[in-house]
Image 1: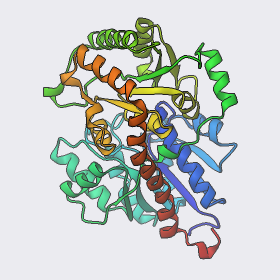
Image 2 (image 1 turned 30 degrees about the vertical axis):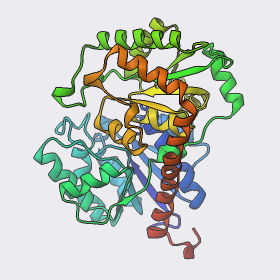
Image 3 (image 1 turned 90 degrees about the vertical axis):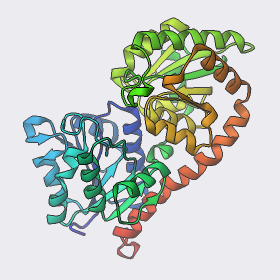
Image 4 (image 1 turned 135 degrees about the vertical axis):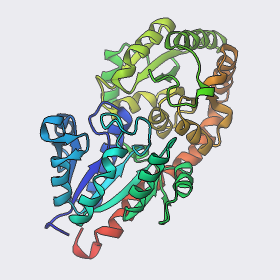
Length: 398
């Protein structure tokens, strides 16, 4: 090791804007701090205050400012290079290896990660794909850069089989280990905190709750042939379907709309208004709080990948609205293709029938999905063990 204690840089989307990314950050800090209690974590981010204020009291973690005036293009810049110089290893977390808007470093992480490779090698900082998701790749340049980046890693762990297979397709020649998304083991807020949240948002826990997540992306991550309709038409379709399903279910349910990114909040509020629901947003609450409310949902229907991860992690049975290929992959992983709804084929009748059938069979769905989720949770824990066994020997007291 370079220092008396382990130093680890976490490379991901760690501004706090995305509840899924925040859950990954928190879960990694938590489990690695248990195994390596004296470890120090460096987190390059455009919002270091999020990291420092929410996790600095509990963990030995420091947010590293990578705003443009620090000499940075997202992760590529002087602050991150200095972090690599200090670190024993750098973990590439979350699904940030894709080629959408590849040449736009304000949006795409691959373009910046690629140019960090030589600095990691110069400073003997081990690169790790830590329960990463990859793709989609629609360009030769994107596939080339991803192949070079992943083959440059000293340990490669993918969060699901489709990413593992995609590694092989793009020409990764090193061993790729299947683990599980770190967000699966994010800790959930306790009941006292849950009571604070539901009181503030006027949620009646005595009513059956139907959790819903939508994203303003709608279908922008899909192939052209799977594109659907305008944002307004899509929200109207969802609202009509949810209202019909609520009437068809004995006793009805209270819709709870979860917004897991600030860009989705206006869509969530529009939908909540049309279905007489409540909004729980990560602009007000941490991922741990969202999960506490999700845990009380009898059924959950989500678009964003990590909304589905967080809901299934607390054993809420899920329906997936496939706005991106990774959602399709996750539903396939749970052997729940019957609950994987393709955006380009949606209709009001399909939505109503799926919601009502899932509601009536939610106990069976929970059991079916939980079996796979438990394996993925074990995989997420194994990722931490694999990392520490590989680079931080227990013989030296860590």
